[in-house]
Length: 513
Image 1 (cartoon, rainbow, N blue to C red):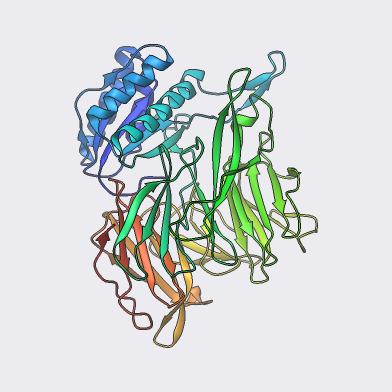
Image 2 (cartoon, helix red, strand yellow):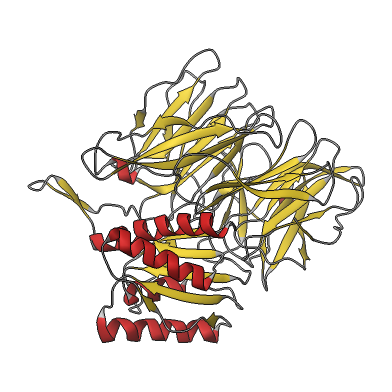
């Protein structure tokens, strides 16, 4: 999850003060209380860099929870020390480094990848993630984790960070009984909120769902029946030392009931102590025939996929040749029910598209996609065959129909991260597509345009009263009711219902679940 707005208590856990300074700079939410925990004292210069970052954060309206805390010792002692400090700080959000950085080269003599950052940084992230899990279990409260990649210093000399895992979209779903469920990742696993009755404002949760040792990311995909399927990354220890990363999948068939067991799909580079750790975050899509395709970036920075046809089992992992991509994949289902893949090109704002004429056909690569998105902003659009993204230069949302010559601007450049929504919303006898996104000043914005006609203009309205952390979500139930939900910086679910099923786009008050 990326922080866009919303105050709350946040802890930064890093290997040293200099690394902590980069993570502190990522906190843009005014009113946040920031505590810093370091596993090593890197001296006067590191502490000075952290002091400057904390001073800048104070200038943005953040509150600093005392001087940085330094925890020393071997792994188990360090984990216990971080847990102790977290219990003292009581954060609801924890920001840590990237536990599985991307390699930059390969050392042929040593037989291992070459990274442009120290091994200690990733080791510190693993200590922080283990401590965050234990802290959540001990405190019995939801804890959100934001893993951050550390990018090289910019031309101005400052390093920046960006999310390791994609923002969660489509996390609000409706079940067969008309009640909705919300799924979001936490330090200790997947959290679920369940609506007590259809159209109601009372929800049960958050419930920590049983499951394996998951990394703090989640992909929620609905099949053609509307059932939610969850995809995540699981870390498992190797017998010879180190860890493997594999893709896992579970589904919810009845609202409020247990998930199916988590099923391992392996990874494109399974069994390799180094390559497995760089498994990209999965993207998945269902086609009209009921087939499921799962994609992931592999160690070589290309795309691999595995699929399950309705009449059979899973195929082995296969590789798509072509341009090298970043760990940012989005699936889009067309009007014909075909699954297509969009991926941001590595080290570039360009996007490449893969499509095929039939489920048993060969994938074709298209490098003529006419969009340039900001990193982390792409998401499937509300209508079939569409993708919504933020323009690289302006941050304004745009919508592109697959195969069209040019995208369409949607207006409303405030906020950051993906813009999502639903289609088929009735209003005054017309069918509309509805969009949701974070707005400026810590609000949630709702937009609407005539279905199929975004070029005719988008009407945006800010729904004050809730401060979103991450990406808001919307669901249209089978009776035509629209519910919008967001998570606050204190990890509380807040929801608002449209006042009319067929009238205007007015919404009632926000309710805390």
